[in-house]
Length: 156
Image (cartoon, rainbow, N blue to C red; front, side, top):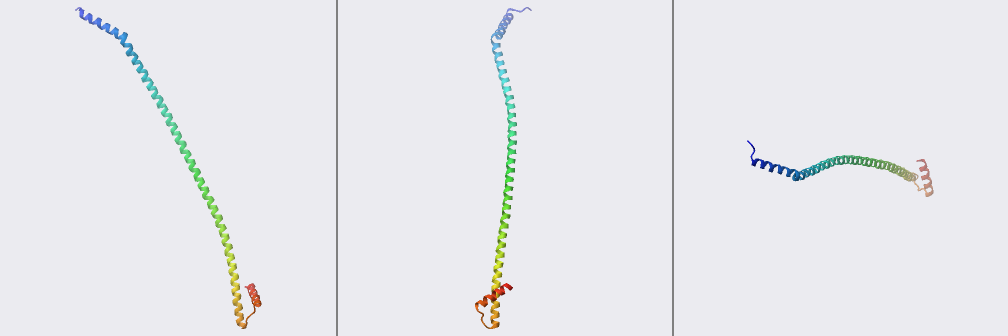
């Protein structure tokens, strides 16, 4: 079995086709494949960078949230301290005012008691003079009346 001419012709045509593909088509295909590989590698490295940046951003966000919570806690503590200070000052002011009002009221009570005593002395003196006048059956003149009232007031 010797190869015949058709088979040799087909082999030569196939060899020319392979040579033509290797010389003219394969470099373009290889170049496109290499460019695609470069793009894919760039995309993967960009994705890795983006992933790393996302992790950094997450870390920064977590730090900012922690700082914000800490600041909020400090603000709440300061507000609570201020509220307590205001309440303490209000209590102290109220106690001072109560003591002042109590002292004024005690002074008023003492003055009213003294005035009531004076009025009572005068009334008792007047009643005593009236009683004495009826006993004596005569009217005592004004100067004697005044002297008797003063004497009675001193005794009472």
